[in-house]
Length: 157
Image (cartoon, rainbow, N blue to C red; front, side, top):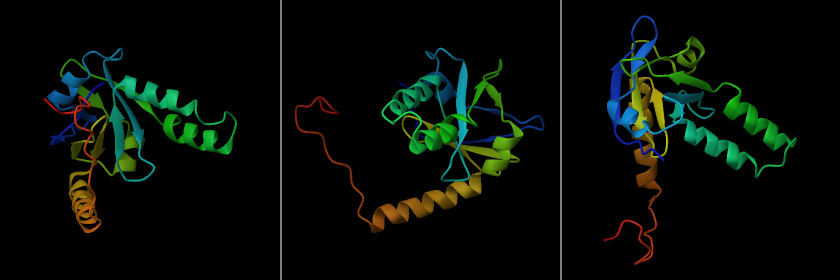
């Protein structure tokens, strides 16, 4: 599975094309679809993005939600109803559809921010504000990550 880290800001041209950062494209090279899957965040004015394997993982996790339940309906329409497969062109660019640009308030520049197993696209100043709030909240609430047990093979020697 791909891993996405770091933040990059790239220009959006008049046709809505933007270069996906090379490190992100390299992380996706083994995918069955040569591009990214994008869906509007239902929490932020941003776009959730990843390879097709991430989206397939969401489909698999949806199997734990009762089919035809309101929860299944809510999640499936939110996750898949507005998702787009955006192929890379020969220069590693994607074309951002207008509805996605409107959702994330994108016009001239797009900030790509790694989120581990997926990445997001934000309007750059909105991302900086979001990061500042998130850092302050993490600090004030004493957020931590648990260490794996010694000998678990997770990040050790």
